[in-house]
Length: 414
Image 1 (cartoon, rainbow, N blue to C red):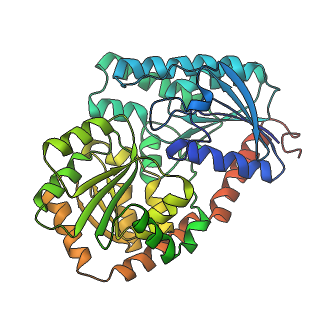
Image 2 (image 1 turned 120 degrees about the vertical axis):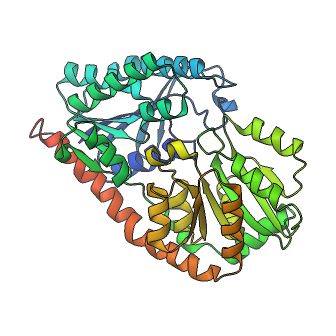
């Protein structure tokens, strides 16, 4: 089977959509399929093109059996709503041009956001007479409306584009049952919408205590109780609640709030922490693989925070990572969202009301005084049952093969 993937994020990006798309593409290649990815140059979450790619317009790479076809996209910094629209539009045009230069695939896998990739998906599907699978990682129109990021007329355009994307797709996939319910609620037939959940990194099942000790020594963290956020530092994460909780707990020098990563809201969060004179908050940049494993092993409790308005329409990949690593977890999220359900179902931690610093700090103190080892055991067991690589990636391959097979009997040739 020949698979062409359109995704704005890919390796060497290690967070969010880039990580998802990379392990999916590499699994398909390892199974003998011919896989190409049309993407841009790595920029996320720093919103800055990585140094080795600066100044390039186009490039083709090969990694782990996957052909990576990169094209130019405008990368804004700082990010505003208008600049983000230009960013996404530039990639949509670039991806369309680059994709047209590739061989006809048996199936297209189109990763959204950006929602604008629906345009080349529909066009290329028509041009090549092949089906496309529309993979929804984030309900972009809902987020834009809930956060007030775009005017009403712009949101209406997004909703019309979203409807077209779903209507023309052979299959629509998404991350969680709640996101699937939202898509079905928009009028998409239930049988057309499948779950394509994230997979855990199996190597995280075997974190060593020594990795955590080495990390603490390297960053001079000593015996502090570490409460860790890692990954994207964006608006949707609502990390003000972490600073406010730290302010309420500033008299307790034994607890350190560690914010690791970067993103569109990072500089503002850092400035606010300085203004609040928070000595119990520390920031670290994105870490390499060895240091990231050390961070997980060293963390006593891991954080998932989301603004109230977006909790129901996004599922951060970090929760899969935390649970696979056996980390106790606390979510400052809407209690009706998927993250809250996972935390409660797994028994891996506690849920605090979104954007409520008092509730977050209370939950942290309660967890600290309880059996953290048991929370960690529950986390790892849940991850094994729900997000094992064999289960998740096997389903991915079957879904794509079935979608391609509906178009042509030869679509599954290996």
